[in-house]
Length: 91
Image 1 (cartoon, rainbow, N blue to C red):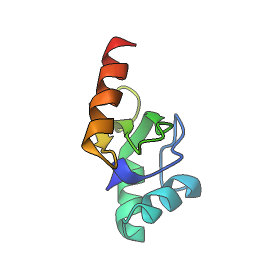
Image 2: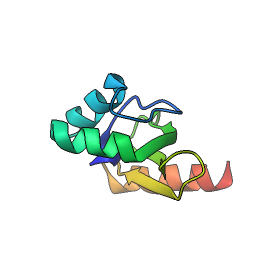
Image 3: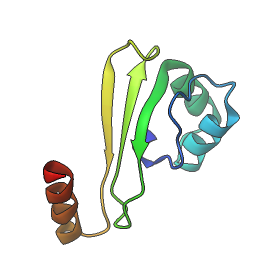
């Protein structure tokens, strides 16, 4: 569900950051799930500016030096996804 959270900012980490937990809850997590996730994973970066709905977020477990996870949120339609992938790969 974290892939569906919007407006995540670089460096968000910890449940004390209510903007982080609020975004996770709006994406469908319970309050407890959002707190546990925020306390475990730091936001390295997010690109959710594509008008198709495509979004990518990189999380790091335990902080910036931790294992990185790449989360993808899909698009509204498949043809649009192929255009986004072409653009991102050849940018």
